Length: 118
Image 1: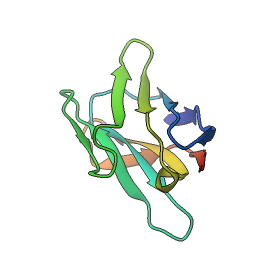
Image 2 (image 1 turned 135 degrees about the horizontal axis):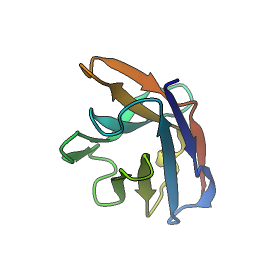
Image 3 (image 1 turned 180 degrees about the horizontal axis):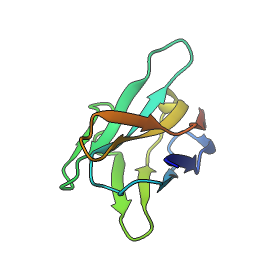
Image 4 (image 1 turned 180 degrees about the vertical axis):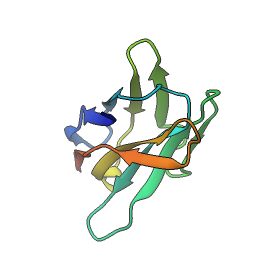
C-alpha cells in the first residue's frame, strides 16, 4: 500500500524553525520526483520545494535561502528544514511523490499544519 505520512508541523514564532518529515512506504523511494506543497486558507496549493530522482532540487522564490529539502534513502523519508519562518509560510504542508515505474501518477500525504505567529 502506497503511503506518505507527514509529521513535524506545529506552532512557531516568526523567525523560528521547524523540520517536516514525510515517511514513505509501498513504493521504490526516490525513483521519481518528490516534493513539498503548502496550502494557506483561501489559497491554492503551491509548490514549496521539489527534488528529482537524481537529487536536483528546486524552491519557490519565496523560500529560497530559508528552506532545504533533503532525502534519507535508507529510511525512505523526505524532509523539509524550514528556517527564518514568516507568517506567510503558514498553512498545511503536503508531501507528494510521483510513483514508479512511469512517474505519471502522484500520491499525497494527509498534510501537516504549520502555524507561525508574530
